[in-house]
Length: 424
Image (cartoon, one colour):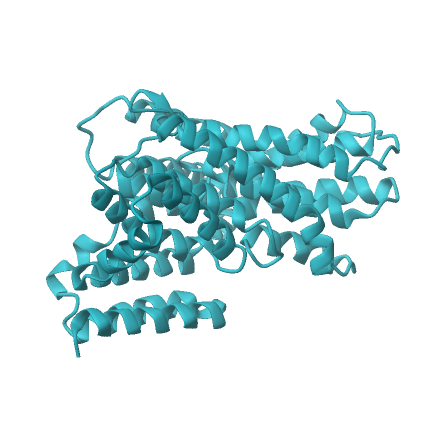
């Protein structure tokens, strides 16, 4: 059988299995990579080079530092402080949503929901209002701003690794506004949407600050990670694994500090458990699979199909990529989708004779926001619904899409429009 056809069939089967058996994705992707090696689609000597170690190190280090930050109780205190600034439930929801968005620009989306949702739940209970829309608003807002910075989401780290972006590049890149500004425009335009959705929630809010910060060092470690990534961005010829070393190094400092402070390994074990090893293994497997299908010519074949469908029009191609990404990410986890499509949009750009940035940024906007349409479109949504279910609340798909669809449409359309105006 033709190697390209065989690779495409194996890849398609893998994707179907990823959708059906989501709990076993971390096994399916590496197993597919092993099959590629056995069939000699991917040479053994290419294995180490095919894995983006910088991405994996950044994720692992950031996950550990975030867990220390959560354990310090600082996010809960920050949320309660913010609630003192509002007068009604309507504005409390808006403020908590914006706060979760800002936090998720630097912290994993699921972790953000786990930090902020309990505060929203407590407010809803105290005021005897329905907590379901409150938690949904927090979840979709956390998904939105994950694409704003290098460390905000796994997909952002994948984007940076594919086209060589530093932390600063998300804000100012090659003499133009970066993707962060498109994300922020979308975030600001969701405020009127949230105000309208919660227009009937006029009950008064009386917030108390009860959360106590156990340790301020993790907060400084979080800030230190961002600062060091910004400083590293200033050096053009920095080592390839610089960002990975920074994230892992800061996390290691935090772990050693906690060992010396508590003289106990309990918190350290909690931090190590919080690192999502399954996601790291999944990504490593996906990197190998993508290297295999690229070598077999599948990526170029998919790109040629897109170019043919778009008729060579950059505008039509851009709209297709954004719309397709929104639609697919509503039902498919955006990590394997973005990992697969980044090489595709790069190949499409080469065929059209343009830089890859327009299509890559459009891909990330669509894939990040598309998950907000349905309850299963993003891990943060599932986490938020899980919190509600533990409290005895049943969340219907209708409850979710009532907020998710208008939120997604305004944010995706406005964000994609900003990217087009700046990068077309």
